[in-house]
Length: 222
Length: 353
Image (cartoon, rainbow over all chains, first blue to last red; front, side, top):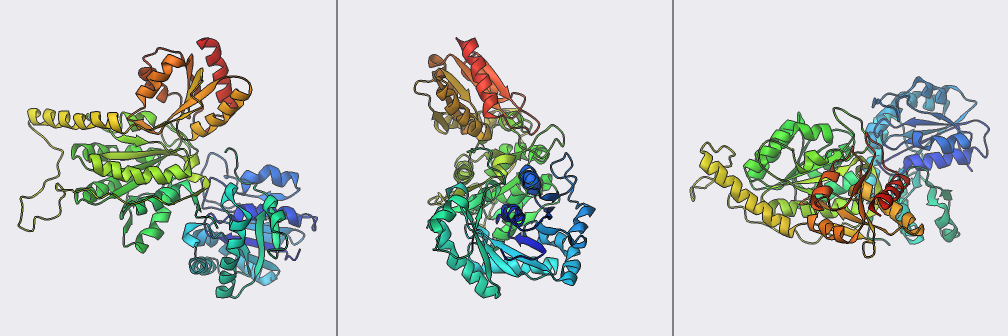
């Protein structure tokens, strides 16, 4: 696995950033002793990293999230501990940023530190099956909006195209040209294709850079 | 490749509204329905529509009244506390016989309550949503796909009967993501000779009004409106029966509670308990006949709700209290577990035996 000290996940609202970020943090733990994940999602108080708290705790990942997340108070405030992501270099950190440019605004205050240290990646998570970013151009526009809002440039694309529980290997294959077009429009490479574990086995050899993931966020009923 | 897209319940409502020809959305943000407004703010400009964040919920509902009076399809959406604010507008819409499509993505109450899912606006939706004698058609989706189909149908029913259709959802279905098909077919166009569109000197002015100072006229207007309601009760009832063929116990549940209940019924069947479900899709008109009919065949009912017990009134009324009805209830933003429903089925089995 090729990685930097800080990995930032951002993208369109509902593209699956949180789930990919949680899986990524767990994967990092195999290589690094100290791994933390910071929940910067001030946009959606319903489903966020905090919901994966049990999985992260079991995996030995330090979770930094708003004191108010999941509590009785709905306040879009970030805890001061998030600064430890940029200050404490003994940790490898994953940052889970809220959707769209509104979510990315919150990232902006940490960007000068990230740029100064220059040991970070910023990954643009995309899902072709989300209607507002179903064509590469609208995904690319969304990418530029996020960059303008936070003041940093994406370094690569994460193709997380899926239809939830109904995703098939075919659906994933069909999304590869989409991710490639976003890569061509923006000039940044595709870092990985995030694929549910059971489907990943089917796709072996057909797609490069498969990142097998589990669904950790919400799935409490069928 | 799949023809489906992955959508949040709230987004699905918004997209289905656009497909139904709605080009006027007025709203005010409130969790857990804000995605409807957020989606519309992006989508409406793409289809030459109007997205307007109103200064308040009351302003938004009055904008709906205005657009509807002009003969166009309009909608607003909110969550529980915001719906209370719109109450006056609901009554005026009814008094003016105007079509409108309203969404309530319910959260726990009363007061500001919480932001987690709830069904505790059932009474408000089906009974007391404003002053005066009137009804609204109330639709209760149980999946993101039904957010699409019932929104599309809701706009049609509103125009067909010149009345308000309320989509009564909850925070869970509003927030959950599921793959959906957006194939909905054609939009039926209705003539609106009553609409305020300008006379162009060719006809008498139309007037949209809910003020009737002569009691004889107001009474007659109400009687005629209720004739329309009666025909809706005959023709527009929608419900789903699940494993009811040989059922001895009948769960009645709508929306998210029905999703949980299906799992409980599967588990009950594995234990040898013959359970089934009637899921009202229209909460008004309520599927009274289906329940009255089931009362001949089953021993007892379970009303499963995310409230302190509201729909249970309609269940008891529908079956004329012929069988015991056990309440399975979680409130305040909590969701009943399949185990909660199973426990209620056990109790129903004992009492109904």
